[in-house]
Image (cartoon, rainbow, N blue to C red; front, side, top):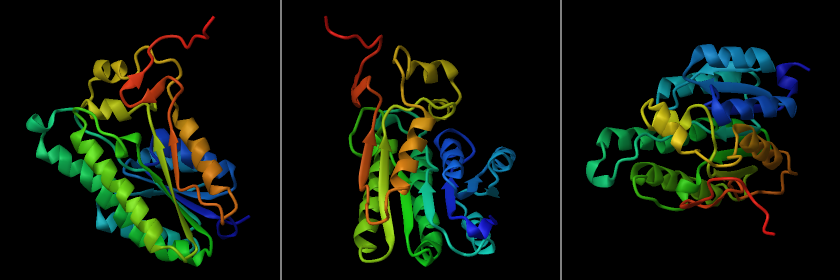
Length: 258
């Protein structure tokens, strides 16, 4: 099949972690995947592996997002799936000590960037006649915790954006799916949050038996987008067995009561 013969999926933040895993999984599901992220070398290598198309894209940049929509247009102008995955956290300071620049960055990426990409691709999604937008939010978009003010504020806003879109697009052929992961061990999320401090990043998952992986979330994305189009998985919250809630994490072996 040529590219235009295949359903088209766009995945943002595809250079690592959940984004890269999702791009690989959707390619296996038969989609031609546009892998969009800032790091050109990584998405170029990924696109070569999966037969996709790389687009260097910082979702906070209007010109980069325009280049993304131009690429969709060059491949037929129809988008079937958009996975808004790009985002992230910076810092774990309490509100009284927080850096406004960190909060602004988290809001720009998680909320404004997501809105910008969604706005840009809505016409192509609608042209498909059966479009799907997947928002990768977080359990941080539904609960609060000390030191997480900036990230939880941004993720709550992204969850609100998701629900608002579902209301506003009701009656049009685009379904809106929110996947809210809990504790996922990826190579970069906590490392970025702790500004490159590998020791602090490792402590997040210390003693946790089988935290979620990027492939687990990619599996959730694939399941949601391959349901019959009249089936809308409004919200899927997914945590590892060891994490009962944001503040309730079992560290140590999972044991059966005897």
